[in-house]
Amino acid sequence: MTKAGSFILALLGLGLVAPVAQAADSDCRSCHIRPAPSSKAKDYSAIYLEPRSHHPVGAGIPASTAGAYNQPYGVRDGISFFDTNGNGIPDINEIQLFGGKVECASCHDYLHGDAVEAPAVRAYPFYLRVTKDRSELCQICHRM
Image (cartoon, rainbow, N blue to C red; front, side, top):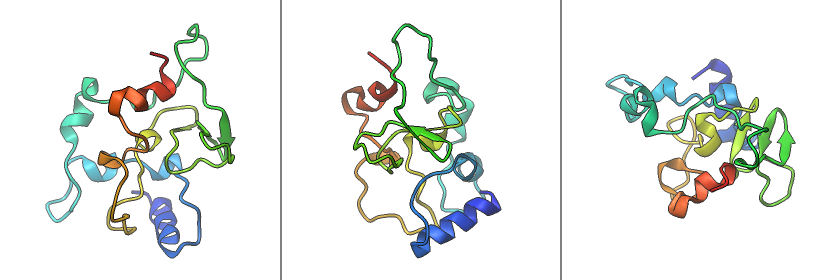
């Protein structure tokens, strides 16, 4: 994680900033590819090395694909998002794009690990922002 990311997470832990992901601070690969033996992070190297096993990172939502994709309808601080509650803020349970691209933190709530105390109960496994049951997560961006 970057120094800026560590600083943001420290501020989050103190309650001094809102829990809004920033693309530069949300690269899960820094902890989850071949973590140090002393780390508590799970090794997801196989997932990152096999692109067919997860959504591509760094992909954008095509605007001209004849209605195959939904477009995010909220924008704030360089984050475009699907503002499901209409409050104009990219909330922890809303899919977010960073610089118009899908990143790990687009679908996963990145607020976990040693830097911040994770909530005792998570709504969805794997820190997903939205349930993947019945392809609900996919249908936020993809028209199926």
